[in-house]
Amino acid sequence: MRQGEQEASRGGKQTRHGRGPAISGLQIELRGATLRIVTAAEFIRRARRYARSNSLEYRFEPARGKGSHGRLWVGDRFTTVRHGELKPGTFRNMLRQLEIAKESF
Image 1 (tube, rainbow, N blue to C red):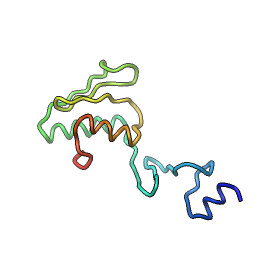
Image 2 (cartoon, rainbow, N blue to C red):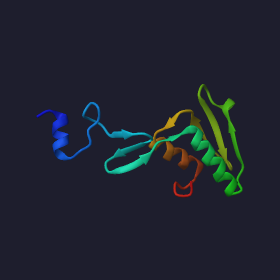
Image 3 (cartoon, helix red, strand yellow):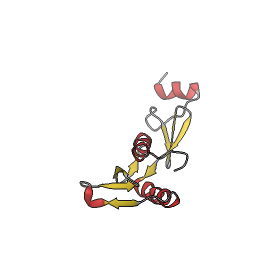
């Protein structure tokens, strides 16, 4: 029995190559939990909205980054933002650097 057939017989989702997590659109399913992939532009918009709602200073400095990176300030905390899609772990670490709870973001 081939790997793809084994996964199908076990009820697992099959990808194009028969391995790895199944990706659909902007969501990724990994070990039963669905995580949403966020783009840098969406992260910056959400950070601006969060700062306004919490009366915090907000600024984004594209000149402070190198290449496709920029520095995002919320209050007195900052993080570096890379343009494009942010992986779930990167997203969580950026929130941690800004000291923002994921639920309130």
